[in-house]
Length: 299
Image 1: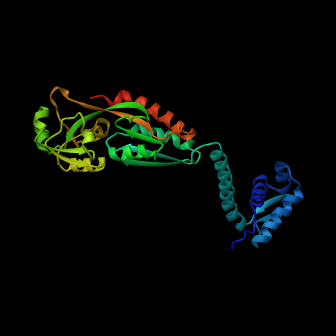
Image 2 (image 1 turned 180 degrees about the horizontal axis):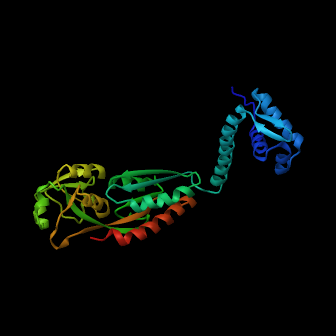
């Protein structure tokens, strides 16, 4: 069984002597006697079997070995401080983990912005971000298995906050036959292959669909197929806009500028109120989705 030959306090004293330039200065800073500091460092060196400091006059200088151990010991003491701070944070009710589930068809740039703001204030809280289909979101909400769920619809008996309206536009590859038309009616789309980002008919509620459909589980897969000239799809405008701008995809010229819209709901599945970390992320999320609302619905 491993038995340490040193203590964290000895390493702190060693660092203080180096930082202050000598034992007398370090003793004054730490409010300890100089003899206690000499004893601590001597015992540290004796335990390691190495000389870390050399005293010349009233100043202490690092040996080559001492320089190596100084760098490593600073990480040790910082890790100890972080560990104790984490204990204080968790004791205050701050959540150690936040589980977030996002429905696959929804854009998530505002969520990314919120998480970016949350990161420097996370205080050790881990984020588990998972993509799911509508059925998966329903299961998560039913089991209260996440802290935040971003879904296309609210759930009865569960707190749901409307965040934003997202505009969906039809796109295809520039090489697709639809891309050559100057105007397209919904009737003309019916015989074409449509890639539907969903896992069941619930996602299609209220939207007239083409006769031929491929159900795609992930946005990445839908975009990859579209770029290869396979079918067309209604996708979030802010997701496809950069791809339209760079020529990877082409937006279909629908008659009467037909658009489809879908709400993003923030669902809080748990029966208990959100904790402090979840509340902070909730505030940041609502802020960024509020900013996003003005741009997401632009045709």
